[in-house]
Amino acid sequence: MIILVTGTGKKPSGWVRHRFSLIHSALANPSCVVGPSILRKIREAVPERNEHQGDFEELTRLLKLKFPEQLTLWKQQVEDWEADSTKYNPFEVKSDGKCSVK
Image (cartoon, rainbow, N blue to C red; front, side, top):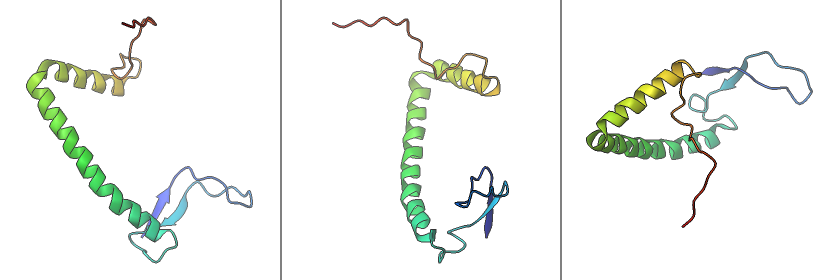
């Protein structure tokens, strides 16, 4: 299996490669030099991804129960901002620059 990757850099010789470089997939060619390393990383990453997905789903479920209106509003703000980055950014924290310490 061959994967095309955009935005590749330069070869050590300085010759600029074609825009697409060919990379053999570690899953299709496990004997590849980088294959075992990539395969190991995938095996570690998949369970972590599953754990994070479960945590996200649990958080979303709890937010729907406790703050349904705010969650709906926030989701809409995110979708609006993703469609047009000039709109309100729900990820940006607003601060007046003042800090209080008690």
